[in-house]
Amino acid sequence: MSTKTIPKKSLFYSILILGTLLICFSILEIGIRIFFPQSDLRIGQGYLFRYEPIIGYEGVPNAKGYFATSQFKTLVTHNKEGFRDIDHEHKNHTNTFRILALGDSYTWGHGVENNQIYVKLLENYDTNIEVINMGGPGGDPPGELKVYKFRGLEYDHDIVLLGFYVGNDIVSYYPQEDDSPPQYGYNEKGEFVLIGKVQPPEIVEKIRKESLEKYSPKKYKGLKENMYYWLVQHIQLYTFIDNFQNYYLRVIKSSPFWTKIKNIFGIENKYALGFLNYCKPEDSEEIQYGWNILYSTLETLKHYSSEAKAKLYVVIIPHVVQTSKNIYDYELIRSGHDPSSFDLEKPNNKLAEMCNKLGIDYLDLLPVMKEESSQGKLLYFPRDAHWNAEGHRIAAREIYKDLTGRGWLQ
Image (spheres, rainbow, N blue to C red):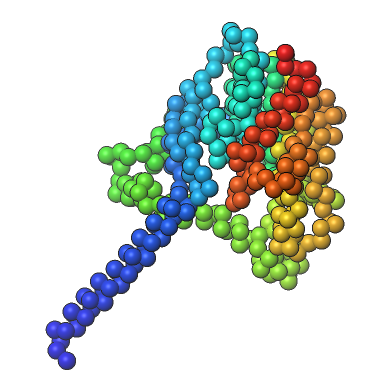
């Protein structure tokens, strides 16, 4: 065999391997762009959101970007305050009935357009209703209390509407003095206060600049930063892997296989239950602490809203598992638990009892969501379990009906 043929064969196989890899990569990239399109929120740390020294993060004022998955593609538009809404005057010069909305990704409008969010749909029922939406993705009641205290109180308003999602809004915080941004928690005297430190302006500016430079094209960037930005902007496969590595890690941890492994060692797999952890007959110490935090949060929120001469109104948003027996049975089969071991309405009833004790008006959307789901209506996105447009529409309808029945709307 001629030695000259060896390099030719090596070159041929190298080209063949590279070509195969390129074809496979192209198929994956095209498939992701069609079935799992990635979102501009991937670069949201410097694009749509930024660090805030007290609240933790805030929307970038007047920012705009697309939020897309395999199930939706929506345009996210911020107002001059950084909230997903239009601009509102601080003073109510037009004498409208003002609802200031707080909440997490449901109230922010995960998966729907700005004008499809349940709180904004209320404006369609009555031209005298004006909704100021201050919801934010990843929010929780203690964080929403900060939003209200430091932003919401600047606005005239008649109602503070708190959208409470029973799936993950029961949180346990154990803040420390050196935490930044500060968090609500109990100090040594048992008082419910903000604990931690607020970063000085120069540090805040530095954090924001570093985040912006990481996700925005700049000539003075190094090779590594430029490559990262280019990959994020142009290769959706890269973004898909980065977006979903934590998601699939949670899927693995909640799988029956992982549960069986932990059971061998006598360890309970709390990831297998997820929301159902809140539905057990007895709450764990951590969950009970979360309920304590929530009680103090609602108590403080009512104090501030009362000072502003506004009513506090809690809307209880159900988990998708609560609304469908089929989904509930599936979740239990996955985790290998007995259905009789759980009370699906427990978190809702416990929150309702808490509101009654504090003298807070509330609306539990679970009954109507169960009824609508039983009629075959799809109210949640199948994968991430947020409301779709129909879920938001029904929520708005029920809230308007309830507000009218209370005589709050003139």
